[in-house]
Image 1 (cartoon, rainbow, N blue to C red):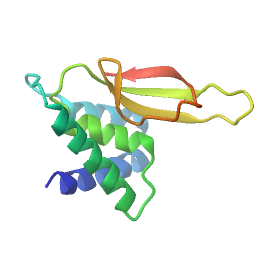
Image 2: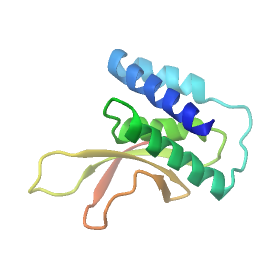
Image 3: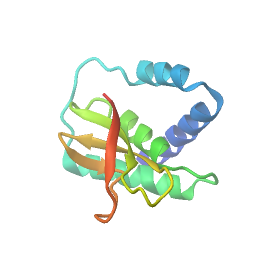
Image 4: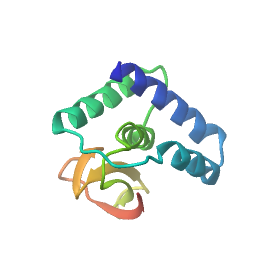
Length: 127
């Protein structure tokens, strides 16, 4: 069931990001992710959610990059406290501009990890 929710969520987010101005998308997303009270979620449930999002993203018939994956994870785990969506750029003057999105909980990346040889400078935090 979580896999199906992830696939639907990724598809709707991808459509929203494509069709809406980002400011409108952000307001709509904020409205959908606003919850009453936070809940603790087990590490196993977090890992299962990340697996479902990544697997669905890899199987959908469209390209689903890091931002929709991070947004879907943030939505599916929206009741978890201290969850932030981070957006940054790669620190490498020899390369072209490259942005990346990931989700953190208390400073630990739960989705969107990158190799140790790459370094990103955080530009924006979406709480």
